[in-house]
Length: 360
Image 1 (cartoon, rainbow, N blue to C red):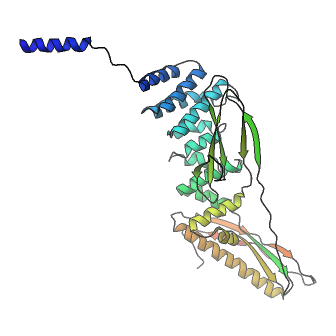
Image 2: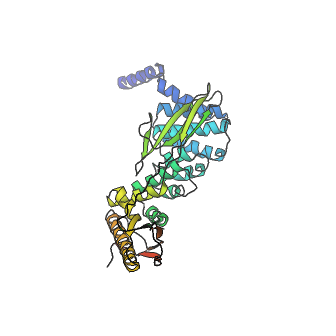
Image 3: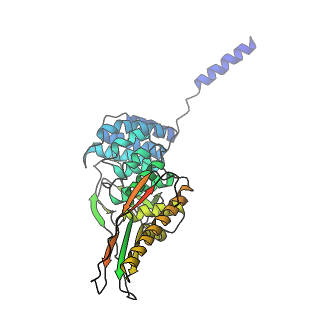
């Protein structure tokens, strides 16, 4: 009886104690949940912004749900509240390191290509979406970033498509014996686009993401390595003032980059690979027979070198598909005496079969 009386007394005392006050973090989490449930986009945006700042254990789930909600808003135009909300959701996901399912990201590829690309880089099942960005219609830096990501993953499908985009050339300069033949080079251009931006009034700061290829720029974050590394930069755009934005998207030689991937996969110097795929040969003319023999020798040598490069790539784990290149020699006749016509030069066909690396 005494024991039962003691239990009842403890129970009464426990009930009489005041409830423990929630911590500041718990109060903020409750506030964030309330804002997320609001029908107003600006309040929802603040809910996302606050949730990301708190870095709670359920943040990834919260952001996944927000992406589901944002999908119908993917075509919202500039300055609209709906667009600002989507931008806040993307920034929260990128800045917090969240993983958003590829299927939820794909609808945003057309109108929010760069932030979507950054998030797709985190997903192992995003190869198909990334391949869609490696077409010629993609802007220079988007094209480069998508290819770099697939290169890092050693995607076999990407490699197969890459080889279909490679162009093999052979240029012959025909000169008089002992003539001095020189060549010149060009300088690539760099393009910069400038603009201004401002978040809608009342919204949290909105982040804009741009791509770059210069590691010297302050704030640049490595997205993917390649022959030319890809970086992204985050610029905060407040609602109380306009911010200038600069975008760089020019100066990428796509064919040179493709050959650069082959060089890295084959563990060879890029200039060596480029010289073999885009050969330039000077032939000093003596007789028509000697010219034809030298041209044939050079074409066969080029094919041999290319097969050896692919053999090195195969050792890295990627296999060349069955593919055929037709190399049409370009002839620049610089002879002082052209009374003896050059013999015709026929196209050279390089036919690669799976697992074939060198000439037999």
